[in-house]
Image 1: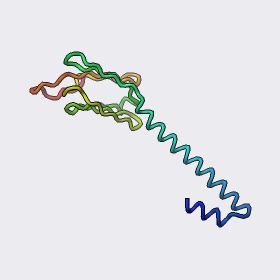
Image 2: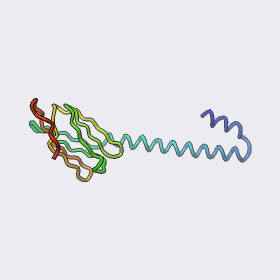
Image 3: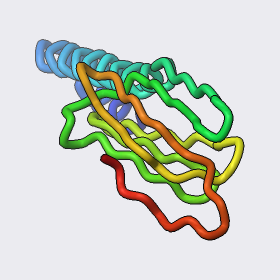
Image 4: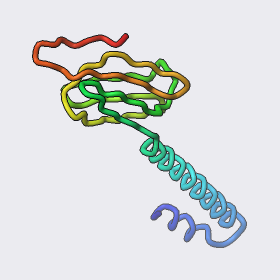
Length: 128
């Protein structure tokens, strides 16, 4: 802001001052809009639907996750489920109990996953 102010004071008279003021104003407006777009796209990730349903020893998860499919991944560590997707999407969900991932699928932007309650002797299972 100090730089802009000093430029305006230096070129306050004449056609050059008017042109520089207009350019600085347009650039400021452009960057303000770009910053608002970036912030709103970040907040849009928070509004994606996520459903976790307990069915006895099973947890069924259905979530909308931005793709492409190659960027979508699931990891379970203890009582936490970590979901990653495209466009920098990341979500961590606390599970009701330690679980292992049985299966997962990603179709048309919707992630489906089944998790099973982990017992002490169970090893990590790989998704099918």
